[in-house]
Length: 369
Ligand code: ZN
Ligand code: ZN
Ligand code: ZN
Image: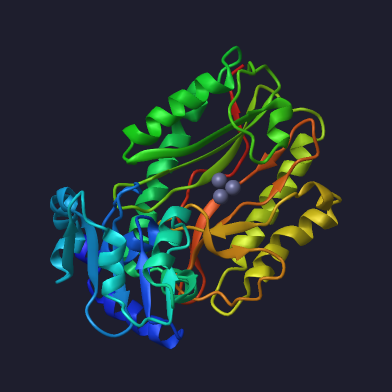
């Protein structure tokens, strides 16, 4: 399974893409790029761990000597990858730089810490620094069958959490109390960790990125619940459903139906060759036609994989054509205040259409009052 999800051939593929991008090497510190290429889920720290991947020649992993065991136990341990351990009094930047003597341009992990970037610049003063995403984006954006399976598992797991939300969402409880139950369930159902728990009730439902507060949930509140976590596989979940406690406010049922139809239209628009911005338009046009365009405050979606937000972004201006294996959210929202709603599923572009990875019902869920 790990071999399918993190196949050793990615190192050679990335080296080839590095060469074609006109770079001499990639330097990847802990984060999604390192995990994508090696399966090694290392934690960023002041002690340097860095994959040195030359466009030509063997790659190596520079790492603290006491981390060798955990790296060995990860998929990186069975890739024929050379480990270059360093001791507390060594200079690991010098060790990494020595492997790339004469390099003219290197790609750095997008999320590398500034202290690593500047120390690597000192170690390789002649090398222009670029972003590794210029090389890796094209590889990471199209998910393999094993990656889609990992995202499907993440989707099923977060669906089980949403199925329990009605039992926690009761008047008199605070958003924070409900969020704590949800966060525990995200882990209990199988995620390695909860990444975010948005519980936006009443007027807070009108803020797309509201976090849970001490607000007490009342009868008649609309509650937007947007939740996600990271699975042990490394792949992420992200799913939104909108609930109402008791009877919804006047006007709400009307625009919720508009939203539900728009979300479905955007999903149905997904197939190879369609551009990302066409999917955004498929969601936005019916919302605008119904008079709620100014209340749809954000893009329609974002790619998802080893990160919750990654390419491709489903936004006006992104003319990138969808291709099989691309995975992203379809999450239009309408926020007129003093309430709002959002529906979010992760979908994958298939050979001739799309597969939905979240399958909790879309109808407004009325919970007991
Ligand atoms: Zn977001
Ligand atoms: Zn979300
Ligand atoms: Zn999302």
